[in-house]
Length: 363
Image 1 (tube, helix red, strand yellow):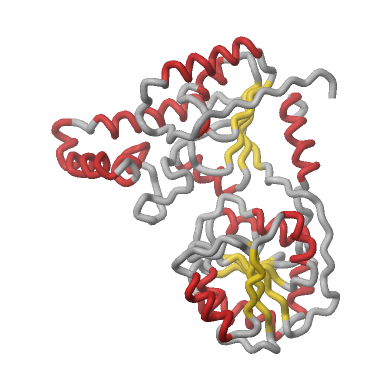
Image 2: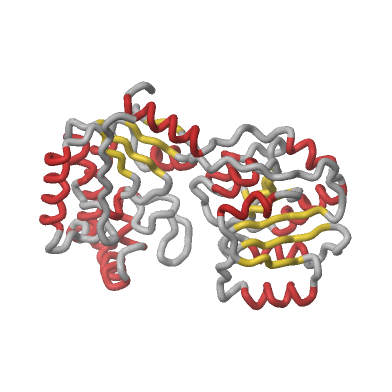
Protein backbone atom coordinates (compact mmCIF):
# COMPACT_ATOMS: atom_id res chain seq x y z
CA UNK A 1 0.00 0.00 0.00
CA UNK A 2 1.49 3.34 -0.97
CA UNK A 3 5.14 3.76 -1.84
CA UNK A 4 6.83 0.77 -0.23
CA UNK A 5 10.38 -0.12 -1.18
CA UNK A 6 11.81 -3.45 -0.11
CA UNK A 7 15.45 -4.44 -0.01
CA UNK A 8 16.39 -8.00 0.88
CA UNK A 9 19.95 -8.74 2.02
CA UNK A 10 21.69 -12.10 2.09
CA UNK A 11 25.09 -13.49 1.38
CA UNK A 12 26.71 -16.90 1.26
CA UNK A 13 26.14 -18.84 4.51
CA UNK A 14 28.89 -18.60 7.12
CA UNK A 15 28.73 -19.58 10.76
CA UNK A 16 28.71 -16.18 12.44
CA UNK A 17 30.42 -17.54 15.55
CA UNK A 18 33.65 -18.38 13.74
CA UNK A 19 36.30 -15.68 14.05
CA UNK A 20 35.76 -13.21 11.15
CA UNK A 21 37.93 -13.71 8.09
CA UNK A 22 39.55 -11.07 5.88
CA UNK A 23 36.21 -10.21 4.26
CA UNK A 24 34.58 -9.21 7.59
CA UNK A 25 35.52 -5.53 7.37
CA UNK A 26 34.20 -5.27 3.81
CA UNK A 27 30.93 -6.98 4.72
CA UNK A 28 30.38 -4.77 7.74
CA UNK A 29 31.11 -1.63 5.70
CA UNK A 30 28.72 -2.84 3.00
CA UNK A 31 25.93 -3.39 5.51
CA UNK A 32 26.29 0.03 7.12
CA UNK A 33 26.50 1.73 3.73
CA UNK A 34 23.28 0.02 2.64
CA UNK A 35 21.55 1.29 5.76
CA UNK A 36 22.73 4.85 5.21
CA UNK A 37 21.97 4.77 1.47
CA UNK A 38 18.60 3.03 1.58
CA UNK A 39 17.45 4.78 4.79
CA UNK A 40 14.86 2.15 5.74
CA UNK A 41 11.95 2.83 8.06
CA UNK A 42 11.98 -0.79 9.24
CA UNK A 43 14.77 -3.35 9.50
CA UNK A 44 13.46 -6.87 9.98
CA UNK A 45 16.14 -9.46 10.80
CA UNK A 46 15.12 -13.10 10.35
CA UNK A 47 18.48 -14.83 10.71
CA UNK A 48 22.04 -13.75 11.47
CA UNK A 49 23.71 -16.47 9.42
CA UNK A 50 23.41 -14.41 6.24
CA UNK A 51 24.46 -11.09 7.75
CA UNK A 52 27.75 -9.58 8.98
CA UNK A 53 28.62 -9.69 12.68
CA UNK A 54 27.78 -6.03 13.35
CA UNK A 55 24.27 -6.15 11.86
CA UNK A 56 22.48 -6.21 15.22
CA UNK A 57 24.41 -3.26 16.64
CA UNK A 58 24.29 -1.29 13.37
CA UNK A 59 20.55 -1.85 13.05
CA UNK A 60 19.89 -0.77 16.63
CA UNK A 61 21.77 2.53 16.30
CA UNK A 62 20.08 3.35 12.98
CA UNK A 63 16.95 5.50 12.81
CA UNK A 64 14.84 2.57 11.61
CA UNK A 65 12.46 0.52 13.70
CA UNK A 66 14.24 -2.78 14.31
CA UNK A 67 12.30 -6.05 14.34
CA UNK A 68 13.87 -9.42 15.13
CA UNK A 69 12.01 -12.69 14.47
CA UNK A 70 13.27 -15.67 16.45
CA UNK A 71 12.37 -19.18 15.33
CA UNK A 72 15.60 -20.85 16.45
CA UNK A 73 18.62 -20.14 18.66
CA UNK A 74 21.22 -18.96 16.15
CA UNK A 75 21.99 -15.82 18.13
CA UNK A 76 23.67 -17.79 20.91
CA UNK A 77 23.93 -21.34 19.51
CA UNK A 78 26.58 -22.32 16.96
CA UNK A 79 24.52 -25.35 15.94
CA UNK A 80 21.30 -23.29 15.75
CA UNK A 81 19.01 -25.89 17.38
CA UNK A 82 20.76 -26.55 20.71
CA UNK A 83 22.22 -29.86 19.56
CA UNK A 84 25.95 -30.26 20.12
CA UNK A 85 28.27 -31.86 17.59
CA UNK A 86 27.98 -35.15 19.50
CA UNK A 87 24.20 -35.09 19.01
CA UNK A 88 23.35 -34.32 22.63
CA UNK A 89 20.95 -31.58 23.66
CA UNK A 90 22.64 -28.46 25.08
CA UNK A 91 21.14 -27.45 28.41
CA UNK A 92 23.19 -24.24 28.76
CA UNK A 93 25.66 -22.32 26.58
CA UNK A 94 27.39 -20.91 29.68
CA UNK A 95 27.75 -17.63 27.85
CA UNK A 96 29.86 -19.19 25.09
CA UNK A 97 32.08 -21.50 27.13
CA UNK A 98 30.15 -24.64 26.22
CA UNK A 99 30.08 -23.49 22.58
CA UNK A 100 33.87 -23.54 22.65
CA UNK A 101 34.01 -26.86 24.51
CA UNK A 102 31.54 -28.79 22.37
CA UNK A 103 30.76 -27.08 19.07
CA UNK A 104 33.89 -25.56 17.51
CA UNK A 105 35.64 -27.48 14.69
CA UNK A 106 37.34 -30.59 16.11
CA UNK A 107 40.92 -29.28 16.38
CA UNK A 108 39.89 -26.11 18.20
CA UNK A 109 37.43 -28.00 20.37
CA UNK A 110 40.12 -30.39 21.58
CA UNK A 111 42.49 -27.52 22.28
CA UNK A 112 39.86 -25.70 24.34
CA UNK A 113 39.16 -28.82 26.40
CA UNK A 114 42.85 -29.40 27.03
CA UNK A 115 43.28 -25.81 28.21
CA UNK A 116 40.16 -25.75 30.41
CA UNK A 117 41.77 -27.20 33.59
CA UNK A 118 44.45 -24.49 33.45
CA UNK A 119 42.07 -21.58 32.85
CA UNK A 120 41.95 -20.55 36.55
CA UNK A 121 45.72 -19.98 36.35
CA UNK A 122 46.35 -18.70 32.83
CA UNK A 123 42.87 -17.49 31.91
CA UNK A 124 40.59 -18.72 29.15
CA UNK A 125 41.90 -19.55 25.70
CA UNK A 126 41.35 -17.12 22.82
CA UNK A 127 38.42 -19.01 21.25
CA UNK A 128 36.44 -19.12 24.47
CA UNK A 129 37.10 -15.43 25.10
CA UNK A 130 36.01 -14.59 21.56
CA UNK A 131 32.76 -16.55 21.82
CA UNK A 132 31.95 -15.04 25.21
CA UNK A 133 32.46 -11.62 23.65
CA UNK A 134 30.19 -12.38 20.69
CA UNK A 135 27.32 -13.49 22.93
CA UNK A 136 27.83 -10.61 25.37
CA UNK A 137 27.69 -8.06 22.53
CA UNK A 138 24.58 -9.70 21.10
CA UNK A 139 22.86 -9.55 24.49
CA UNK A 140 23.50 -5.81 24.64
CA UNK A 141 22.11 -5.18 21.15
CA UNK A 142 19.20 -7.55 21.81
CA UNK A 143 18.05 -5.49 24.80
CA UNK A 144 17.72 -2.40 22.58
CA UNK A 145 15.76 -3.90 19.67
CA UNK A 146 12.34 -2.29 19.19
CA UNK A 147 10.37 -5.51 18.66
CA UNK A 148 11.46 -9.09 19.31
CA UNK A 149 9.01 -11.66 17.94
CA UNK A 150 9.08 -15.19 19.34
CA UNK A 151 7.44 -18.08 17.49
CA UNK A 152 6.74 -19.95 20.73
CA UNK A 153 6.85 -19.67 24.50
CA UNK A 154 9.58 -22.29 24.52
CA UNK A 155 11.90 -20.12 22.41
CA UNK A 156 11.13 -17.05 24.51
CA UNK A 157 11.92 -18.86 27.77
CA UNK A 158 15.19 -20.29 26.47
CA UNK A 159 16.41 -16.87 25.37
CA UNK A 160 15.53 -15.46 28.79
CA UNK A 161 17.45 -18.26 30.51
CA UNK A 162 20.51 -17.41 28.38
CA UNK A 163 20.38 -13.79 29.53
CA UNK A 164 18.74 -12.33 26.42
CA UNK A 165 16.17 -10.04 27.98
CA UNK A 166 14.01 -7.25 26.59
CA UNK A 167 10.85 -5.35 27.45
CA UNK A 168 9.78 -5.45 23.82
CA UNK A 169 9.11 -9.17 23.32
CA UNK A 170 5.96 -10.63 21.84
CA UNK A 171 4.66 -14.10 21.05
CA UNK A 172 3.41 -14.43 17.46
CA UNK A 173 2.78 -17.91 16.14
CA UNK A 174 3.80 -18.57 12.56
CA UNK A 175 0.94 -18.41 10.10
CA UNK A 176 0.03 -21.06 7.54
CA UNK A 177 -2.20 -20.86 4.45
CA UNK A 178 -5.85 -21.50 5.18
CA UNK A 179 -7.21 -24.77 3.81
CA UNK A 180 -10.12 -27.10 4.43
CA UNK A 181 -10.08 -30.84 4.96
CA UNK A 182 -12.98 -33.25 5.41
CA UNK A 183 -13.13 -35.04 8.75
CA UNK A 184 -15.01 -38.28 9.27
CA UNK A 185 -18.08 -37.32 11.34
CA UNK A 186 -18.12 -40.68 13.11
CA UNK A 187 -14.59 -42.11 13.35
CA UNK A 188 -14.43 -45.85 13.80
CA UNK A 189 -11.82 -48.58 13.25
CA UNK A 190 -9.75 -48.86 11.23
CA UNK A 191 -8.67 -45.41 12.39
CA UNK A 192 -6.38 -43.44 10.10
CA UNK A 193 -3.20 -42.11 11.75
CA UNK A 194 -1.05 -39.75 9.66
CA UNK A 195 2.61 -38.76 9.99
CA UNK A 196 3.99 -35.80 7.99
CA UNK A 197 7.69 -34.96 7.71
CA UNK A 198 11.15 -36.42 7.25
CA UNK A 199 11.29 -40.14 7.95
CA UNK A 200 14.15 -40.59 10.40
CA UNK A 201 15.09 -41.44 13.97
CA UNK A 202 15.02 -37.81 15.17
CA UNK A 203 11.41 -37.51 14.09
CA UNK A 204 10.55 -40.72 15.96
CA UNK A 205 9.41 -42.77 12.98
CA UNK A 206 11.06 -45.88 14.46
CA UNK A 207 8.66 -45.60 17.40
CA UNK A 208 5.67 -45.54 15.07
CA UNK A 209 6.88 -48.59 13.15
CA UNK A 210 7.42 -50.49 16.41
CA UNK A 211 3.99 -49.58 17.77
CA UNK A 212 2.07 -50.37 14.58
CA UNK A 213 3.82 -53.71 14.20
CA UNK A 214 1.51 -54.84 17.01
CA UNK A 215 -1.70 -53.26 15.69
CA UNK A 216 -4.08 -55.26 13.51
CA UNK A 217 -5.14 -54.05 10.08
CA UNK A 218 -8.79 -53.82 11.10
CA UNK A 219 -7.88 -51.55 14.03
CA UNK A 220 -5.76 -48.78 12.52
CA UNK A 221 -3.76 -47.60 9.51
CA UNK A 222 -0.46 -45.68 9.66
CA UNK A 223 0.26 -43.38 6.71
CA UNK A 224 3.76 -41.91 6.41
CA UNK A 225 4.08 -38.84 4.18
CA UNK A 226 7.63 -37.70 3.44
CA UNK A 227 10.22 -38.22 0.74
CA UNK A 228 13.39 -37.92 2.82
CA UNK A 229 14.25 -41.30 4.38
CA UNK A 230 17.41 -41.62 6.49
CA UNK A 231 19.74 -44.59 6.01
CA UNK A 232 19.27 -45.81 9.58
CA UNK A 233 15.49 -46.03 9.26
CA UNK A 234 15.23 -47.34 5.68
CA UNK A 235 15.72 -51.09 6.44
CA UNK A 236 13.21 -50.92 9.27
CA UNK A 237 10.68 -49.14 7.06
CA UNK A 238 11.10 -51.60 4.18
CA UNK A 239 10.62 -54.55 6.54
CA UNK A 240 7.49 -52.99 8.03
CA UNK A 241 5.99 -52.33 4.59
CA UNK A 242 6.53 -55.98 3.63
CA UNK A 243 5.03 -57.43 6.80
CA UNK A 244 2.20 -55.04 7.63
CA UNK A 245 -0.54 -54.07 5.20
CA UNK A 246 -1.71 -51.27 7.47
CA UNK A 247 1.62 -49.41 7.32
CA UNK A 248 1.84 -47.31 4.15
CA UNK A 249 4.53 -44.96 2.85
CA UNK A 250 2.94 -42.37 0.57
CA UNK A 251 6.17 -40.69 -0.51
CA UNK A 252 7.01 -37.04 -1.06
CA UNK A 253 4.36 -34.38 -0.73
CA UNK A 254 3.94 -30.64 -1.33
CA UNK A 255 2.14 -28.11 0.84
CA UNK A 256 -0.67 -28.05 -1.69
CA UNK A 257 -1.28 -31.75 -1.02
CA UNK A 258 -2.12 -31.21 2.66
CA UNK A 259 -5.91 -30.83 2.26
CA UNK A 260 -6.08 -34.21 0.52
CA UNK A 261 -3.59 -35.89 2.88
CA UNK A 262 -5.39 -34.70 6.00
CA UNK A 263 -8.94 -35.25 4.78
CA UNK A 264 -10.25 -38.26 6.67
CA UNK A 265 -7.29 -38.30 9.05
CA UNK A 266 -8.46 -39.23 12.53
CA UNK A 267 -5.22 -38.23 14.25
CA UNK A 268 -1.85 -36.72 13.31
CA UNK A 269 1.23 -38.22 14.97
CA UNK A 270 4.28 -36.15 15.94
CA UNK A 271 6.66 -38.38 17.94
CA UNK A 272 9.72 -36.16 17.42
CA UNK A 273 12.77 -36.46 19.64
CA UNK A 274 13.89 -32.96 18.67
CA UNK A 275 13.26 -29.92 20.83
CA UNK A 276 11.03 -28.32 18.21
CA UNK A 277 10.95 -24.53 18.23
CA UNK A 278 7.42 -24.32 16.81
CA UNK A 279 6.21 -27.35 14.76
CA UNK A 280 4.22 -26.41 11.69
CA UNK A 281 2.80 -29.94 11.70
CA UNK A 282 0.70 -29.06 14.75
CA UNK A 283 -0.79 -26.04 12.98
CA UNK A 284 -1.46 -28.07 9.84
CA UNK A 285 -3.19 -30.83 11.81
CA UNK A 286 -5.37 -28.37 13.70
CA UNK A 287 -6.18 -26.42 10.54
CA UNK A 288 -7.60 -29.68 9.18
CA UNK A 289 -9.50 -30.30 12.41
CA UNK A 290 -7.41 -33.32 13.43
CA UNK A 291 -6.16 -33.80 17.01
CA UNK A 292 -2.55 -34.84 17.60
CA UNK A 293 -0.56 -37.33 19.60
CA UNK A 294 2.80 -35.67 20.16
CA UNK A 295 6.02 -35.97 22.11
CA UNK A 296 6.20 -33.36 24.87
CA UNK A 297 9.44 -31.86 23.62
CA UNK A 298 10.37 -28.21 23.13
CA UNK A 299 7.59 -25.97 21.84
CA UNK A 300 5.29 -28.94 21.31
CA UNK A 301 4.93 -29.31 25.08
CA UNK A 302 3.69 -25.72 25.40
CA UNK A 303 1.55 -25.58 22.25
CA UNK A 304 -0.44 -28.77 22.81
CA UNK A 305 -2.88 -28.66 25.72
CA UNK A 306 -2.80 -32.27 26.90
CA UNK A 307 -6.26 -33.84 26.84
CA UNK A 308 -7.82 -30.82 25.11
CA UNK A 309 -6.55 -30.56 21.51
CA UNK A 310 -4.20 -33.53 21.62
CA UNK A 311 -2.39 -36.06 23.77
CA UNK A 312 1.22 -35.78 24.95
CA UNK A 313 3.73 -38.49 25.80
CA UNK A 314 7.31 -38.56 27.04
CA UNK A 315 9.74 -38.27 24.08
CA UNK A 316 11.04 -41.67 23.04
CA UNK A 317 8.61 -43.59 25.30
CA UNK A 318 7.23 -46.28 23.01
CA UNK A 319 5.04 -47.80 25.73
CA UNK A 320 3.27 -44.51 26.49
CA UNK A 321 2.82 -43.73 22.80
CA UNK A 322 1.33 -47.18 22.23
CA UNK A 323 -1.04 -46.66 25.14
CA UNK A 324 -2.35 -43.38 23.72
CA UNK A 325 -2.88 -44.84 20.24
CA UNK A 326 -4.66 -47.81 21.79
CA UNK A 327 -6.83 -45.41 23.79
CA UNK A 328 -8.19 -43.86 20.57
CA UNK A 329 -8.65 -47.24 18.89
CA UNK A 330 -10.66 -48.55 21.83
CA UNK A 331 -12.70 -45.36 22.21
CA UNK A 332 -12.97 -43.39 18.93
CA UNK A 333 -15.38 -40.93 20.58
CA UNK A 334 -12.27 -39.50 22.25
CA UNK A 335 -11.27 -38.17 18.81
CA UNK A 336 -14.49 -36.19 18.54
CA UNK A 337 -13.95 -34.77 22.04
CA UNK A 338 -10.39 -33.68 21.18
CA UNK A 339 -11.57 -32.10 17.93
CA UNK A 340 -13.88 -29.81 19.92
CA UNK A 341 -10.88 -28.48 21.87
CA UNK A 342 -8.90 -27.33 18.83
CA UNK A 343 -8.47 -23.57 18.88
CA UNK A 344 -8.26 -21.23 15.89
CA UNK A 345 -5.01 -21.54 13.96
CA UNK A 346 -2.95 -18.52 12.96
CA UNK A 347 -3.31 -18.06 9.19
CA UNK A 348 -0.71 -16.46 6.98
CA UNK A 349 -3.08 -13.54 6.28
CA UNK A 350 -3.60 -12.90 9.99
CA UNK A 351 0.15 -13.17 10.54
CA UNK A 352 0.78 -10.53 7.86
CA UNK A 353 -1.72 -8.21 9.55
CA UNK A 354 0.06 -8.59 12.89
CA UNK A 355 3.46 -7.87 11.31
CA UNK A 356 2.05 -4.82 9.52
CA UNK A 357 0.86 -3.37 12.85
CA UNK A 358 4.34 -3.81 14.28
CA UNK A 359 5.98 -2.15 11.26
CA UNK A 360 3.69 0.89 11.54
CA UNK A 361 3.90 1.11 15.33
CA UNK A 362 0.17 0.47 15.79
CA UNK A 363 0.84 -2.42 18.17
